Length: 148
Image 1: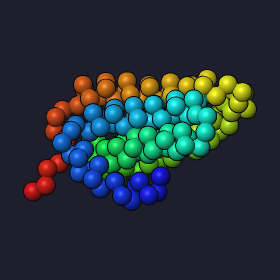
Image 2 (image 1 turned 90 degrees about the vertical axis):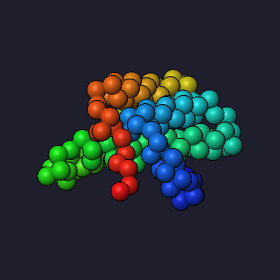
Image 3 (image 1 turned 60 degrees about the vertical axis):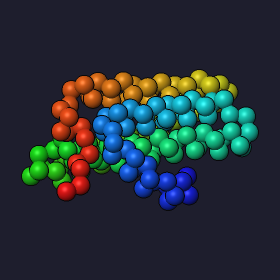
Image 4 (image 1 turned 45 degrees about the vertical axis):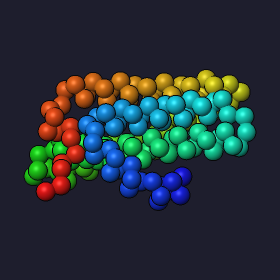
């Protein structure tokens, strides 16, 4: 994961400039969904490593797009507030994921496809949400600002 972030984060970010941010978020969330679903099918270390690659690609696509979109959606004088709330809710999601994941694991450890499939199902809601958001935003808000 760390190696991929160091090596391909910048090229991916540069490539994503050609697309709407909600499109990038949708595709990135789809990578997350696929990666987490495939964890439930994993049978050896190599396959788990493959799923980690897919999940990391999802992370590399969604992270810069999400931050840019929040910046574009916020009024200039309140950008710090919007970014702070974005960070708060992102971190609350990560914190609650450990709790919810632990509960799921306790109850579904013998059924990995249901365990990881349910996580993928929640991620699918993000895919749908980003698709809907893309239809609601103006082109100006949904694009990465071009360099001057």
